[in-house]
Length: 103
Image 1 (spheres, rainbow, N blue to C red):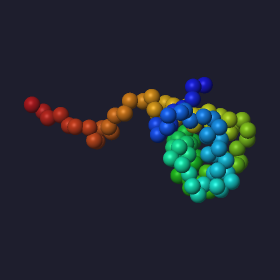
Image 2: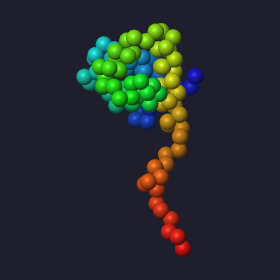
Image 3: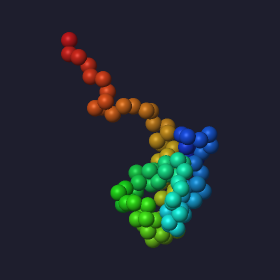
Image 4: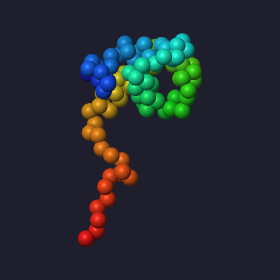
């Protein structure tokens, strides 16, 4: 699998970085998250709607309850999401795009 890239860093976001971030959530050690860890958490919220609105504690409880196979699948989904997000062209939302005048 191709590694995801962190836009704020020169190196890819590894599976280990994702697992480390999940571990911080599980063990309530999220008092000083880096920008990269915040990016990983945002990706987690995107790929798993069950935690989209959870606070860090709720996310940690959810992650703690996952089985090994589910955790591996989630790490892969987060990594894929980060990779895809960086490869997608940056476009303005339709409501921000310039309007064409009728001639």
